[in-house]
Image (cartoon, rainbow, N blue to C red; front, side, top):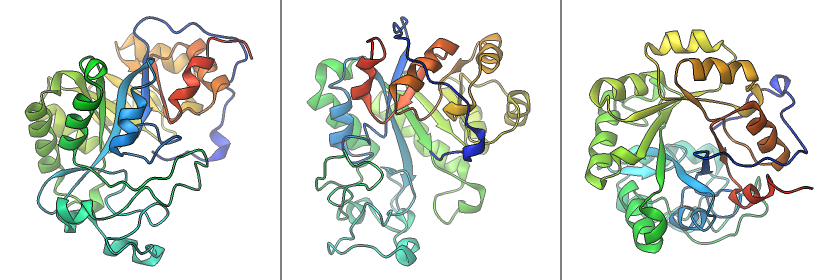
Length: 296
């Protein structure tokens, strides 16, 4: 998920403690990227150590052998990954390592945790890899059996029109692969599929209208415009948190939609958004959630 330009910032912070309402959806972004390597099995297992977390958020790419790989980019980010030889990846060479051109076994040989992440200095460094969605679901069930039974999943299709056939399969096929795997893992009723790419949501809506959908928003268009362009009313509207307003919350609720903003990494902003009436929050620091109801 990206950040919008700084000039869109609005004041969402609050020093007033907030009681988390029943049904509020706290989501661990890429597991818990602030604490452990993003989109890794350890990060998802760790996120569930925080009792407030109700949903695990993750991103999907597709491998050469049509496996769903948990990865934010459809390539290996040079800032956080080493190649199969253990060498760092030059930025100019990032495009040489496209996930769609590698098998799941080849992808597993890359280390995407030992370097850490300069954006998240608290993140613990460890050797880890980009797992398949199947591996993540199975690991969560095995290592967090009590928590996994009730956990929800928020799964992002990472697609763009210019990437079709190059960095991922055509979007209709991408959606079909996701649907098949969600049903095979038995999480289709516990899952929301999200995307910035409205084509992906439209494909999901056509192929599996029973699966919940969330429209990720990073533009500055109006709510009405975005919903009109999508062509149907999704279950969740998910904008960048600094553009959330009381009016936007009201518009969503009038259409029986939830509003769950991304990505919120400080307690005052969490409190401010809860005062506005959002239905959940996506965060990279689930360890901060306990602070929203406490006085500073």
